[in-house]
Amino acid sequence: MELDKMDENDWKYHGEGNKSLVVSNVQHARVLRLLKYSTEDAENSHKTTEQAFRHIQNIVDYSQNVMKPLLGEKFVHDGEAVKLPLDFVRQLSLKVQQERPESRCDKVMDTFSGCALCLPNLTQLSSCCCCCREHRPPLCIEIKPKCGFLPSSRHVTKEIKKQVCRFCMHQHFKLAHGKWKRLSRYCPLDLFSGNKQRMSLAIKHLIEEPQNNFKIFKGGECIYSCKDDADVLQDLDELAQHLRPYFLPSGSLMNGHQSSKVVLNELIQVIVSALLSSWDPRKTHLSEGRVRCEASLLHRDLLRNTNHCLPKDCVLDKILGTQMLDNLDIEGLNPLFKRVEQHLQDFPKERSSLQIDGPYSHSFLEKIQKCPTEDDGSIEYAVGKVHQYRVAMTAKDCSIMITIATCGEEDGLDQSLEIQPSKPRFTYSVSILDLDPKPYESIPHQSRLDSKIVNHYLRSTLPNN
Ligand code: ATP
Ligand code: ZN
Ligand code: MG
Ligand code: MG
Image (cartoon, rainbow, N blue to C red; front, top):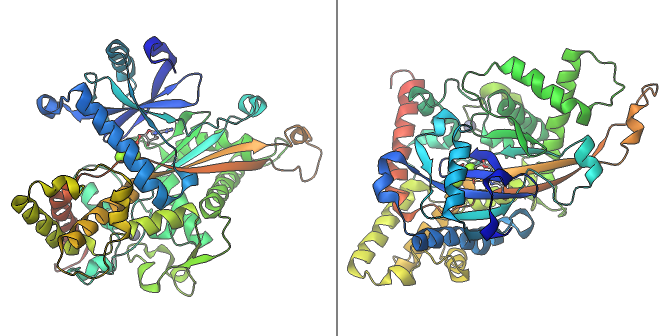
């Protein structure tokens, strides 16, 4: 990419989250991730180019030096902070504006600093052969799994938090506040259970109500995601049309409805195997009390009598292990946050040696890994736990990208006379994205939000409360 010869016509709108807007290159498997800020906050959000560049470099360092060692080399891709010509960024912002969903337009793209994060486009396979591209462009499934365990911390004051998972409680809160119109039946504990049946149901529920937890891309284009007034059945039919060539031999005589079911089921099975794939034959056993969420009532039988474990080092195991660094829960962490705040008031100069705002270097990771297990009353313990909590927050908010390509046997598929024509085979690669550091300052907000969500859940779902 030649930064001095950037042309907005080479880039198109790809997607966005709460904090950034992503554009993809039309020729190369690259994306640019640009930061956004809220329009209300426009005055305060202007950073100088140097500040913005530092901010993005911090994201790169954090992802590379902290999250990558925790989540595994093979899942995390390095990004690069870049400075772009302002003219290019302004043209780009005008170009993408009409593509943006209305619900995201409360924020605007940063067109002042010219800084961005350049990443490989994970919805495309860079090593894919051209024949795959033409016949069957790669599919990519994005899952934002959210927190996959129930807290077991003794600091938890509300018993319900040990019974119903945060995602399921949060759904009720979001519904009441108009964020979504329907409840999702997805429960992260099903996805992280390692039990194939429960995982398949979790993915089925994601497909039925994707919200912002599920997307499908084909050849780098988003073909399935949440729509506000979605006609679910029609969307599912369209999705099945897209997927048919990948999962059903072209000679198949199945009728439309039957084949949609088969095709979606095949997709789910491929996702499950990608999520569980690992070279390591060992297993991580999940403790009994933490794998069942009472809100996931559907399949009580499935929850009972099954031994829950994940293959060691599969993507779910790595993400769950990192999420579990939050082992005190926000209720146990808050007093430690206050200890750090007090210490910083007394010794403001220590803010940098304690690495409160970075740098996200190897020694930041060491503070996380070498944190004492018991509270010895020290500032080191408090800072270590605060850092661990922030890392866990990142792991609770990341996305998994599963990119699938068909390989070989292309030509065998048209033999409609074969009784059981062979299905195409797949290769997949799994990555993790959206690994930004969560701000230290947001901890008090997290604490308030936690009690709001729990109280709302208790009020709205349990009688006489
Ligand atoms: P969130 O609100 O989840 O925190 P965010 O604002 O931090 O989101 P990202 O999740 O990093 O932004 O990016 C927004 C979307 O852009 C992603 O959900 C994904 O669909 C797409 N995207 C981001 N990075 C890449 C990439 N490297 N390759 C392909 N698509 C990407
Ligand atoms: Zn749940
Ligand atoms: Mg995201
Ligand atoms: Mg994010």
